[in-house]
Image (cartoon, rainbow, N blue to C red; front, side, top):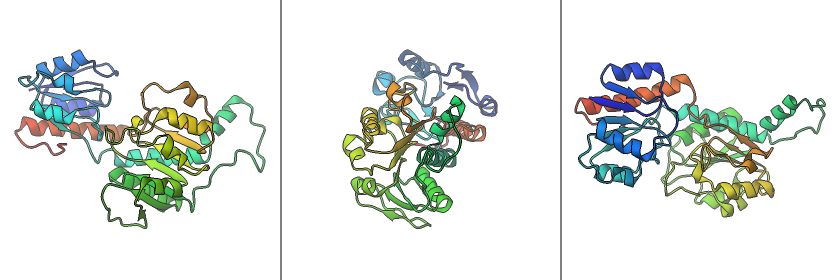
Length: 316
């Protein structure tokens, strides 16, 4: 059975895939183009795509008789795949939940601390050679102990962030979520997004990407945040209206932001890159070898289940 992997993956993952499939590994790190995706649907039984490989409805058009029957996505987020169009074409979709939870939550915690305590700005000051030494009012930031962390989206990752904020930093946790959650630590579910934004010192986005959450945070929502508050996004870039965020940071509506994802990734606006009150990371959420190996092994196991005629364990 023919398996196509659209980006380089860790060696252990490739070896595992090669033990069960005839593997074609694309050695480029850029997203597939539309023609490449359509060709892959014709040539391979299973494809392991990832973020940026935009399998939209028009990619699946006329592909009902294509060879591919499974997209075993490398990653928990799958908003780059039109799942309904894939199903209509007879192609199943899987993802890799669980493997990314703790690593992504760690990045959120790091961004919270870096933004609140102005770590990026401070590091740039030291590297510039312009640091004149310690003094009592130098680079005063926001201490997070005892403050309120507002989490938007209380799935696996949201809960992992909440635990770190509560037990690690001593923060109070409030959250909004589509359904009620029973959690094993002190927290409070709020009725509305606006209520959370007004009460939180740190706002963390942990929602899935897709049409329902695009521009969930825009000019209206940013205006509801407190002037000393910080916005953290480890979800998907287009959950935030980037132009509105730039304006809010420029005008002092919020104190800062920590971003691991961007609306038009990998493009990052000059305005964001030029601001001192923004911490910018290059989508490091799951960038640890053991985590990426875990994601890859899970994607391959989904493919093996298809090979053996079993229901894939992580169907979406």
